[in-house]
Amino acid sequence: MTLAQGRPYLAIPGPSVMPDRVLAAMHRAAPNIYEGKLPEMVETLWPDLRRVAGTTQNVALYIANGHGVWEAANMNLFSRGDRALVLATGRFGLSWAESVRALGVEVEVLDFGKSSPVDFARVEAALREDRGHRFKAVLTTHVDTASTVRTDIPALRAVMDAVGHPALLAVDCIASLACDEFRMDEWGVDVMVAASQKGLMVPPGIGFVWFSEKARDRCRASDLRTPYWDWTPRADAGEFWQYWNGTAPTHHLFGLRESLTMILEEEGLPSVWHRHDVLARAVWAAFDCWQAGNPEIGLNVADPAHRGRSVTAARFGAPHATRLRDWTEHKAGVTLGIGLGMAPAGDPAYHGFLRVAHMGHVNAHMTLGALAVMEAGMVALGIPFGAGGLAAAAQVVGKAAG
Ligand SMILES: *Cc1c(COP(=O)(O)O)cnc(C)c1O
Image (cartoon, rainbow, N blue to C red; front, top):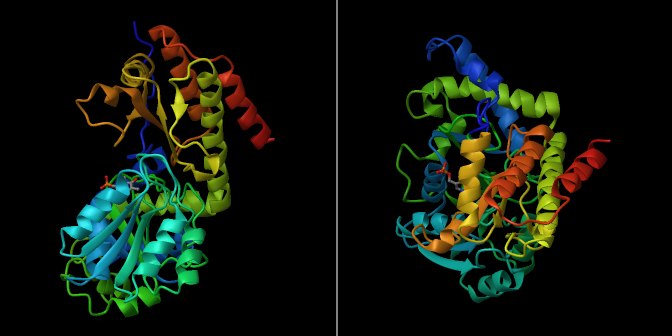
C-alpha cells in the first residue's frame, strides 16, 4: 500500500522545488533573440541580480551548472602557476579545489573535515606563512551542501584583513544564495558563484559569477581565460549575444525573471532569509527530540551557528537512512537527499546518512509535512525515535510566524 499519490515533493538540495509560476513563465514559443520581449526583459534582470547578491558590481551569466561556474571563476581568477588557498568544510570545497588544480593552479587545501566549521586560526597561519603573497585567492563555500556547514564569511574577511593578505576572496553560494543571508559588498567578497537550480528556484541551466571591480582589475592578465569563459564581455556586453557568448538560455531567463520578482519584489530578501531560518530551525527541533530516543539519530553539525539554513545533513544509523529515504519517497511522495561525502557508496556506512532540504520554494506545510512523513516512516520501519519531534517543530513555526 502506498500513500504517495498527490503532488510529489523533491526535498533534495538541488534541483529544488520549482514554482508553477516559474515554469509557466518558461512555457512559451521560442522568442526572437535579436529584438523585442527577450532582450528588453533581460535588461531588467541586471539590477535584480545585483540586489540578490548584495552588490553594485559585476555579474556574468553562463549556460552552466555549478561545476561550470567554478571553472568560470577559476579561469578568470588565475594564471598558470598561481596559488590558491581552498577551505573545505565537507565535499564541495574539495571538488572546487580539484577543478582549480586541473587547470594547473597550485592548490593548498585546508580541510576541516566533514562536520566542523572553518578554524580561522589555521587560515590565519596559512596566510601568514605565505610571505610572498602567492595566494591569488582564497576559495570557500558559504554552505557546503554535503556537510551543511556554513562558513562565517565576514569572519573570514576579517582574518584576511588582519593578516594584511591581498588575496581575493571567492565564495561558492550555490547552496545558499536566496536562502541564507549573504551580502557580497558589505562582507568584502570579490567573487561569488551561484547556479539557477537551488535558492533561485529555476531549472538547472544558468550559472552566475559576480565579481568585484578589484577582481576585474587584478585578473586582467589571467592567462587561463578562453573567449567562452571570459567574464568581461559577459558583464559589459555591447551586443545581446555577448552576454552568453552565443545563444541566450531563452526560456530559463523568463523563469529567472519570475523567480527574482517573487524573491525581491513580493516576499523580499530579508523575509526569504527569515523563512529559511525558521524552517531550518523546525527541522533541527524535530531531530533533537528524535535523537533523545535514539542516539544513532543526529544532526551532522553540532552548533546551530555553523549550520546552513537551506539544507540539513543528518545520520540515522546504517542502513536506516536509506530505508527511510526509500519509504518516504515510495510510500509518501517526499524524496529526501542522499548523504553526500560521508561514506563511499558501496560502504554499508553510506546507508546511515541523509539530508533534508528546505531550500527555495518551500513553506511551513512542506517542511512540517516532510518531518511528519519521516516520523511515519520511522514508525513503519521500526526505527526507534524520541517523541515530540513534530510538536517541537510546530512550536518553532508557530512562535516565529506569530
Ligand atoms: C550544488 C552545488 C554545487 C554543484 O552544482 P552543480 O550544478 O551540481 O554542478 C557546487 N557547490 C555547492 C555548494 C552546491 O550546493
